[in-house]
Amino acid sequence: KENHLWSWKILNFDYRRLYNRSALFDSTLAKNPFLRYSFNTALVMGMSLSYNSVHANPKNPKLVSTLKTNLEESGIPYGLLKDRSKNAQNGNFFNKYLKEFVKADVEYTYTINHAKSAIAFRAFAGVGIPISKSDTTLPFFKQYFGGGPNSMRAWPVRGIGVGGQSLAAYNNQLFNDRTGDIQLEGNAEYRFNVAPLFSNAILFKMAFFADFGNIWNFKNTRPDGGVDTTQFKFQNLYKQLGVASGVGFRFD
Image (cartoon, rainbow, N blue to C red):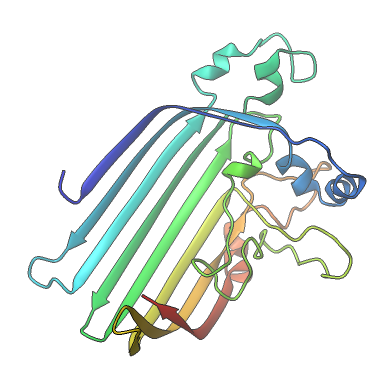
């Protein structure tokens, strides 16, 4: 329908295999348990359903909102292909690699447009739940990440999180890319025109912005079951939210 789009993917087949692993890569996995669970060969087979809408206020066209939702699963019907009498070590191909999870996220934006400026708000929430007892996280290519120009702008891409985990020093060759099963994020910015460039082909703008959010894991990823600073705990939410503000420029 006009301004509304439903999308149903009946089958999503995604197989990722890691090979030619170096000694440094394996040693990094050994030092970081959450990476050990994330970076592995994995198969995703399932369905997804999404809904997108764009709405302009009929009484005030300057007010525009968008809503994007997504729901996907893997292994719920296709998990029947597993040999339930065996485990991942001695079972068939699906026992070894098929991941079972449910993942849902929602994104909402609200923009107030003026002739030479705009105020924009964005909120995002997503959670992925590993169903299989043998999996502590989602497959790494299905996990969330934060940072970069379209997310938490004070951090590099995949540079924030997981939870309260500190970053490794940049001179010791440890892995700093961060991904997780849960993401909460909010953004607000004030954009304003500065000058047209190249005969109005490009509009040079600036923006004041504020971002907050982080990523977490859904389950405890520690092999010993101890306190895991990467696991989402509501009582730690206010301590582990990343918050930053700044000013930047943009070209439209």
